[in-house]
Every structure is written in C-alpha cells, then in structure tokens.
Amino acid sequence: MMELLRMCLVFLLFRIKWRKLIVVCSVLTIVSVLIQISKLPYPLTEINSPPNSAFSWYKPMNTAVNLDRSWSLAVDEHLKSFRNAPTIVPLNSSAKLDRSLVIPSKTRRASRQRRNNSINLFMLSPPSPPQTVTKLPHQLEIYLSPLTPDETLALVKRDIEYSSLASDDDPELYAPLFRNISTFKRSYEWMQQLMKIYIYRDGERPIFHHPKLSGIYASEGWFMKLIEASSQFVTKDPEKAHLFYLPYSARQLQLALYVPDSHNLQPLSIFLRDYVNMLAAKYPFWNRTHGSDHFLVACHDWGPYTLKEHDELIRNSIKVLCNADVSEGIFKAGKDVSLPETTIRNPRRPRRSIGGRSVSQRPILAFFAGLDHGRVRPILLKHWLDKDEDMRIFGPLPRKVEKKMSYPKHMKSSKYCICPMGYEVNSPRIVEAIYYECVPVIIADNFVPPLNEDLNWDAFSVTVSEKDIPKLKEILLAIPLEKYLTMQTNVKMLQKHFLWNAKPVPYDLFHMILHSIWSSRLKQIELPQSQ
Image 1 (tube, rainbow, N blue to C red):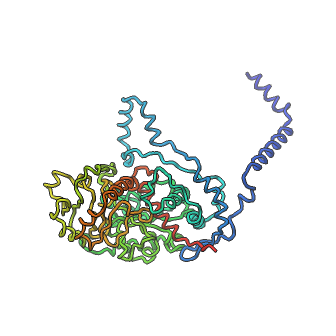
Image 2: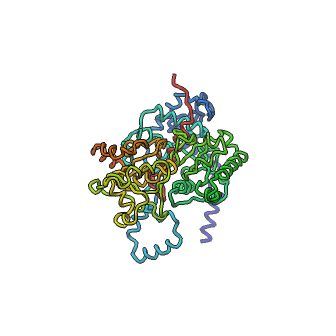
Image 3: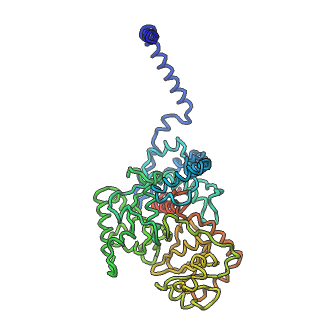
C-alpha cells in the first residue's frame, strides 16, 4: 500500500504538466460562462439596470408616485408567469399524517405520551391543510430588487388597477361573498409574495408581546401570536418593511392599568402616547411617514378611546378595531379595518361546536339572548320579549329554557340570529352566527361590518336600522325563501374566512385581516392620472 501511494505522489508531482492543465480548465470555465449568458432571456445590461428614471420617490402624505406606465407593461409578462407558476408544497402536517398510518399502535401510544408532555398549545388544534406557496419568477425578483418598499407598493397598485383581471375560478374562493373577487385575488397574490412587516421588539409584558387567546377579545391575541410567529410576512430589517406593527394588547392594557370603577381611561391613553413617542425618538420610521405605515390591532371596546392622547396615532395610523363605529370620529371607513370579534372559549380547541343544522331543522325564525345594556337592546326586548312564538327574544337565557335547549343549539335551530349592539357597535354574535350557519341580522347604526373592504355583507346578512326594530318580524318574513336559502348557503361558504388556525392556511381569518391591512396601505399611495 505504501509503495502504491509513493508511486501516485511521484506521478502527480513530476509527470503532470500543471500549466497546461490550468490553461485547459480556464478555457472550459470561460466557455461555460459564455454559454450560460447566451441562454438568458435578456442582456445582462437590461437585467441589472434600475427601473425607469421616471419612477420618483414615494411621499406618503399627499404626493402622487410618478410610475411610468411602460414600466408596468414591462413586467406584465413576468406577472403572468407568476400567476401560472407551479406551486411548492412544503413537507408539513398532512404528509406526516400519511406516514403515521404505518406506525404500530404501541409505538403511536408511546409517541403520543411523549408529545403530550411538551406539546405546543397551538398544535392541539385540528391539523391544517398544507399551504401552497407560489414562487416569483427569477427575472421578476431582479426587476423588483432595486425598488424601495414604497416604490414596490406603487408598482403593485398600478398592476392591480390597470392590468387584466385575474381569474376567478379559484376553488378556495366563492365569488358571491366578495365585492370584486378578481381584484381581491390579484391583490392577495401580491400580498402573499411581497408584504413584509416589521414588529417593534420594544415594550414589556404583559401589555406587549403577550397575547390573550380566550374570551370575546381573543381576535387581537390570536393575530399577535400568529404574526409574531410568521417567517413569511415578518422581516427583521425595517428598511424592507411595508408596514410596522405596534405589538400591544388593548385587553392586557386594560387589565394592567385601568382602575376598576374609576371610569378614567386617560392613564391608558397616556401610556400609549408615551410608547409611540419613545418609538419616534428612538427610530426614524414613525417620523418618516407620521405613522401612516404603522398599524395596531385592538379588539377591546375601549381600543379607539385609548388613542386620543396622540394626534398622529389617531389620525394617520391604520387602526384594526372591533369597535368600528364611524360616528365617534376615530374609526375611518376605507382607511381603518373592522376586526371580527371572535369568542374563543378554549384556545386548545378554537373550532369547538362549529357547524349548524340544515334549513329544514331550523324551526325558529329569529333568536337573541343577552344582557339589555346599551341603547338598542332595551328597545329590542321592549318590542319582542315574550311577544311572539316565532321570535325567541330573551334577556339572559332563562335557566329553564337553557335546560331544554342551550344557547348554541338555539342558534343552530334558528333561521336568523339577531346581533344587536351592546355598549358599543360591535358584537361577537355576528361571528357566532357564522360559526353556527345562522344568517346574522345586524342592528347597529354607524357600524362597519368586519372585513368590509373585501366582503359583500348583503350576500349573507341582513342589516336592520335601529328605528325599524318594531318591524323586525315583518322585515324578516318579507325576505323570499329563495333569497334566504342563498344567504344561508353563503354563510356556510363564508365560515372558512372567519376561522383561526393553529398554522394559518390561505384565506383564513389571519390572512383576511392581513389582506385588509395590506389594502389599506395600498390606498395611501396616489398614482398619477393617465393622460
């Protein structure tokens, strides 16, 4: 063996002509590079060149972005390939479930016991279907790479407004639910690929970065939990961010700072004012746009009122609020986002009891049970409490009635579920009605329904003016059976868009909220009028 190694070493050192070998390798390398360049769809000078010089810097307050129409046309071919690109399905829970079928029962039991000791809270929900991810074409990525986040948004907005409509044949979407399904789908695709959010790490628990996942204000907690765990939408580089998230919980703010029975919200408002002022002094991002690219998510009824001490926070930021009351002058329809109020009783099983009965098993015309606070409910009870057998209208559900039929069963047995406002315009009954496949009847003047930017609420709900409460039964009976059947079908199709998933899936509530925020950000950008 040693002799063989010695001979090989002598051959390598004295027999091979190294200079010739290096020359041959160099020539082969150069030829290979030239061949690859010749196969590129564009010259190198075109690919690496920056976008048209007519593309000016975005000024967020009131200045239009000068985006050359030719630049939008130049990337249109890439957009077509983006929409038709193959999908990449990651190895995830679904694949693991298939493989688990061959595991012996004893092994499965032992593995299940080990997992139960350290299982994450979110893994206790039903497994979610795999999420498909469409990858942008390489050339389109090169075109977008020199753009700032605001310039990218301008390009996206022009593409959505001026390019041909997207296909509306997505099996995951049901067209009657949407105001414009083509525009929604086009915008959603861009959001999935491009949107980046920077989350401020400043702020101590429990007010910041500590989501509360149960109760009627759970929406803000679930959103916080899922966005902070997202690698797809979150960036650690604020210079790449299209949006900035203020990661506080209005519910935790109330629990930490409000003095019971004091009726004084000023300490909460001052706390938020000081927090935003600290961010503005520490980082350049708030002052750069006066907060117009920042957003907050608050489901507590007091969410809007805790913003009053900071003018820019209340005027410029994107406010995602359950209390979406336009009459207060805080929530601005078209700029702010109406957040669905979802009641989560068990965070380990957020989908518990979801589903309803068929139309033939819904003998009750309308149902409501609840406290009589606020301006609307006393009027509702005055006119309909114990007045009509078809109208099951109660205050708190009587115990003797509940023994025969629980609150969820009442909803599942009713054609219409009455959703009157309480102290504020929002009500968790709207989403509960959707979960139980009961057509919601909204009674709250000045209320903007959840996700109103995208969803056509006339297709699956009834809105009754507060002054028309005495005519409530008349209004419901006047709805033709065919229209009711359509609305009830639409409610069932809508349900998937109002569900929280442990691992977010396309078009679920997490993504629908994100898209509403994304749409609000796009609206801030003004494009020049076509000549």
